[in-house]
Image (cartoon, rainbow, N blue to C red; front, side):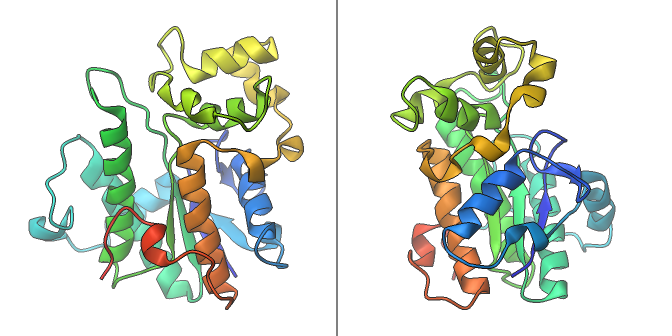
Length: 246
């Protein structure tokens, strides 16, 4: 089992193997539920800068294939799809490797009047990017709705791991007065810039968080882990994707 990972910054996946982010703990815990192999020795972080460079070597995708049959409504999706395609290409060339592509649903109300629609298009965009690379099937879209702070709030709430869906209804824009980052900073009694100095990711029971976007990601990630470790998969593949892989 081996994974190539990419995120957006130091507070999610992290910038490098030497400086992993908080969500590496989530991947480690979820992998441990379905395999004895230690995820901490089984990954490499690919920076978005390196990924963008790799995108230059990927031939332009025909417009008819960019969204696998559906026109993309939101801006920036084609660039994200191309990055997912590059990560999938790296993983496939390495052999027997999975890929995890992290991205927040960081939108403003003017950009996305329907947050669920935006979330689903982002997931499908990343799934399509993986599949465009010679039908690469071991990719995972790691998409919190709207941002990873919602997953952390599910742990820190007064009654942990219950009805966490409400945290997914927080604004997707950090500038909003009730954003997940502001709510989490208030709970931790610190400034927003100090949140990740207060969070002890090793103490979070990631396996019990019930945010719908987390559960969806968890099913997909564990499905891929099981496949890479040559185990029977617990959940059929079509139940772990929003796209219809053929």
